[in-house]
Image (cartoon, rainbow, N blue to C red; front, side):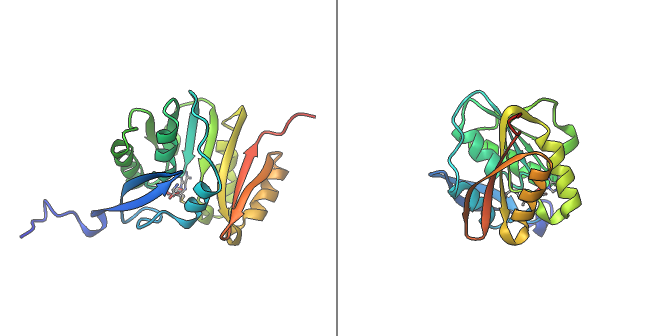
Length: 200
Ligand SMILES: C[S@@+](CC[C@H](N)C(=O)[O-])C[C@H]1O[C@@H](n2cnc3c(N)ncnc32)[C@H](O)[C@@H]1O
């Protein structure tokens, strides 16, 4: 017989989500109340399929909108010399990302933050399946805020659904003077690489 104090409320019950990322197998812990709680999101899946892990180096990476943490954990796992900051507005997402970092043995180099608690400093790489559904003005503000924290030689890798406005986002980024190139496109998603323009 279960008791209320040992049985989590239904929305807090945790479950496993298996995924293969850049050739390695993971079993993430997830729960209701986070983005794509039951499987690796198809967009995130294409992000990994269309890219390779960054070269390992003592770099600082940001996963913007980490959800339960697949991108942040995979970055930390493939780049043992790097430090990864994982940011989300969802407290449960941050808890799960922390739990997943522990499971993957990368908790010493992966830190989770709410957006306003992130320490200062520049990022060598920003990776994101951004929260398109917050609407264009909020998305543009979000990207403007975090892309401004790219190191001069840094770049961001974003996955965006074509039906969710990947091409209009590219147009906006370009008009905001970012250099954008398409790293790949498959199954309705585009992976964009964004960097500071080379001064003319
Ligand atoms: C499309 S989901 C991607 C989640 C995860 N990276 C993945 O690939 O499964 C976008 C995430 O951004 C988060 N988010 C929404 N608004 C945000 C904001 N202003 N700052 C940071 N994260 C935000 C959402 O809570 C959500 O977890």
